[in-house]
Length: 333
Image (cartoon, rainbow, N blue to C red; front, side):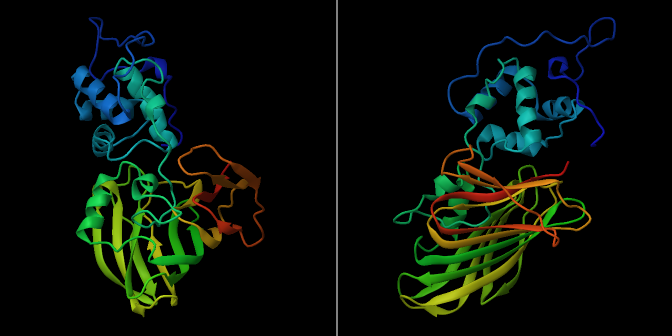
């Protein structure tokens, strides 16, 4: 796969399209109409309908260019249940513009900011935080699952400290996340906490929560086609106003190929956040940096280089973290 060189985008051809000589001459660069008005999903859906192409035929055409996108993922894009974010997916969008006869950037210009790769959020607005739809845009089924679980109101637990430890194996895959949180009740009678994790785009399996401490796993809802997992953590004891507890668990992460970043999106302020990324000594990146983003943006507000020490790990520490995203990204070569 890695040695396969994709053809130039200007040479994308429809599957099965031939002239009388049996050859497949490259079409001229598309100068078709712009995408229909609306968001990315509406524009993509209208363009697919107008083209008359099946999703499987589109998948095959993309595969011939070295870009492998499943039919399910294409279906989710056109229905607005997810959006392209990874580098491979963004290349697929540019190829789709050509395949569907649209102008350059007619679809890619409609993409919103990427879904935060942070793995844990609350479900609703907090006094100084963000709403669910701001944290997980386009995730209508997440709202449905929260309703099914009758998730408690946001803000019942105040995050005092969060510690993420993210592990990358010798194959350069992020495979394990260990999480530790110190929380304090802001109301009486808090008995449970709902957490959300989602696999990377295009992975049709769910993360799994294991090794829960100071709580136990309650109801779990999985949506494999979108890689979504929503789970209850039932606390060891009911918390009164002002009581605190520690929550710890691990997340087994489905394989999505080589990983190049990890970050957490904060819907509400947190007093202290620590992120450690541990690399296998057999696969240490050549470069590593911290990044910070403000809510609703896809542009780094702040970046700084990080040192990968003899322990093959890097970390960031932030105090009084406000809503937004903090993470670490790295380069393999």
